[in-house]
Length: 64
Image (tube, rainbow, N blue to C red; front, side, top):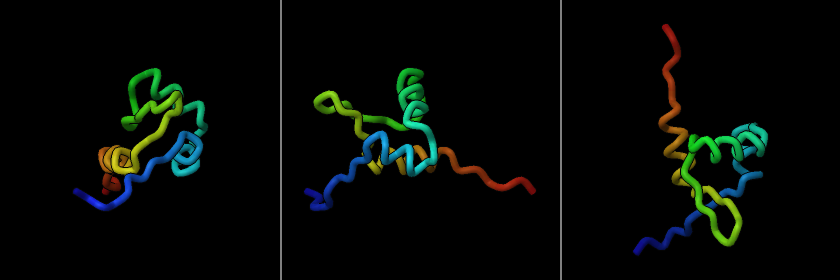
């Protein structure tokens, strides 16, 4: 079993990380876009590994 703790970001933390409005993340959840999330006890949290995986899918090379 892995001894690394799982890091979670709440909506405010993720919105700061990406410089987005928290409302944008709410809209994305409603539209079923954006990173996967968990709803735990009425709270929304994002696993850091899911956020990083989503970021990796958004990578683009600069136009030449």
